[in-house]
Length: 259
Ligand code: HXC
Image (cartoon, rainbow, N blue to C red; front, side, top):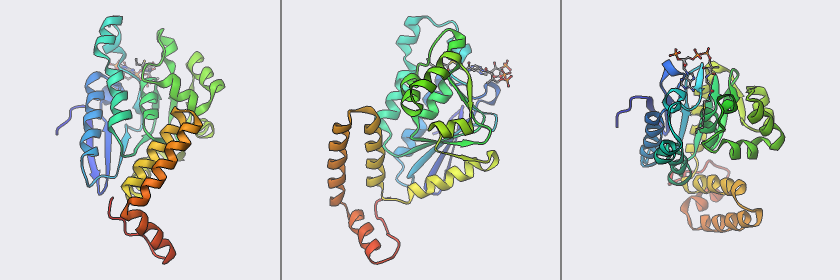
């Protein structure tokens, strides 16, 4: 498939989706969000790919939803198109393989929300995260109020959403928004290495690891624990579980079949 607002590259078993609207700091218009979802689905269906990365430019991961596209929209226009709802549904229901956000520069508003829709965030040293919607007379609309609060806690989420201030990479890593920080110039290469490690694991266990962590934040603990137990036991029906444990006992690297 060909795309106008993103670039899609494959590095062995890792796919890199690069947001590519430099003239608008990768602002998320309907076309770009639709293309991100299409590319993720294309890579989900590609048996060579085990992990995806979404990244932007050194200056901006994405500076938010496209304000120029939204400015004149009415409430009914926004509800009828529901672009942000479609994006979230695709991430939550259609994409089972892991997706990493590699964030350099601004990740603001919908940009921060897109990063949080990914499974985890790797930050470049110059990353700046924020939910500045309050300055535009709105609030986050792609799940940011919920995901940010779950990731960094009520006090910091309130601070970010009510003041509209930005958080740098160090604060984001301390707060639990980003999992690791890399030098800006190395970020994408390092993200590809991290994704390559994940893509080298057994896919059924990767998919279940992702699903169980998502359950941990979405449902009551006991339900999550029960779900995890069912997933865990079911993995004992795979060849890869036998191979992974045999390899450990035999002191060698596993040769997983389902990658
Ligand atoms: C549309 C945007 C944009 C955005 C930047 N641009 N952000 N266009 N939507 N979100 C455009 C600018 O208009 C400008 O275009 C070009 O990108 C470069 O931006 P500058 O402002 O000139 O760059 P700079 O001075 O370096 O400032 C960078 C910045 C600033 C601090 C990131 O651009 C900024 O504050 N952007 C808006 C951030 C924001 O409020 N995001 C939340 C959006 S609301 P021209 O044509 O003038 O050169 C949101 C809601 C999500 O995300 C919920 C969905 C319902």
